Length: 128
Image (cartoon, rainbow, N blue to C red; front, side, top):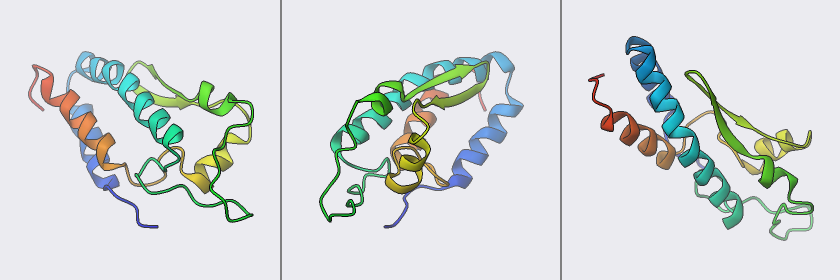
């Protein structure tokens, strides 16, 4: 499974945001949380990793839908605290789904996510 995207792009974006006014960073964070939630949930619903690859097969060799109670999907939401964007996940076992089934990014940021973030930053009036 090949990862797409480049974590260095996110680091560069983070460095540029740190140099920008705090209000700009807050605005970008607030605007980015809903689209990131949509991207993560749509990948979850489609049976894909957030990188666009098919989800790894289960122990029996069949694709998993990862839905028993719906708790992981319903809790998975990006929220902001000031300039910080984080993902709220529910059940304790969700962290294993991140590692094995890539329901959230690990390491490199997915290309769609980086493009979404870049578009949000580009719309802002303050040059970075």
